[in-house]
Length: 139
Image 1 (cartoon, helix red, strand yellow):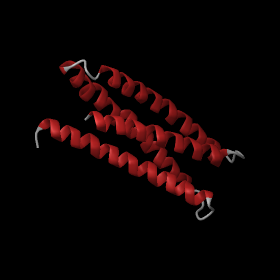
Image 2 (cartoon, one colour; image 1 turned 180 degrees about the horizontal axis):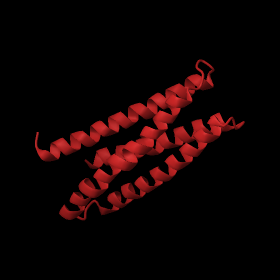
Image 3 (tube, helix red, strand yellow; image 1 turned 30 degrees about the horizontal axis):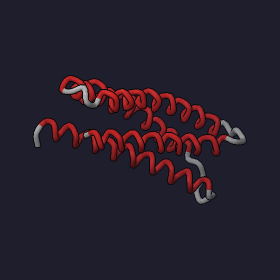
Image 4 (spheres, rainbow, N blue to C red; image 1 turned 90 degrees about the vertical axis):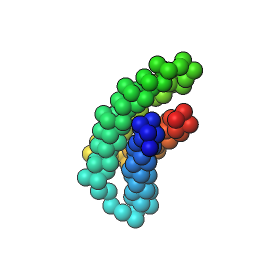
């Protein structure tokens, strides 16, 4: 496997890992919502921490600083989609901030805390899936 193929495989593997964490979080919230499980705030917090820490501090900087930069250097053909993807990286961070606040409301016992947190997770999952699909198509 050459360097390019290795970089693409690494990005796709990171996408799979992130998808798994978000899917597990959604499944857990589904079980809590159906009253088949009690909320495990340590687990919920760990999932939200991963969703923040991994893409925002590790994955996106690699894409922005290396992959997208290399594509822009080679051709201007992808500039529009790259601009869109980088804007989505910013929007993703903003969505995660909302997700964290929603978890705090849920943890604090706010009457609509669970509903808001679940909606925030679903909104993030939708944004993330759309974003990763665009990136993988570009790759």
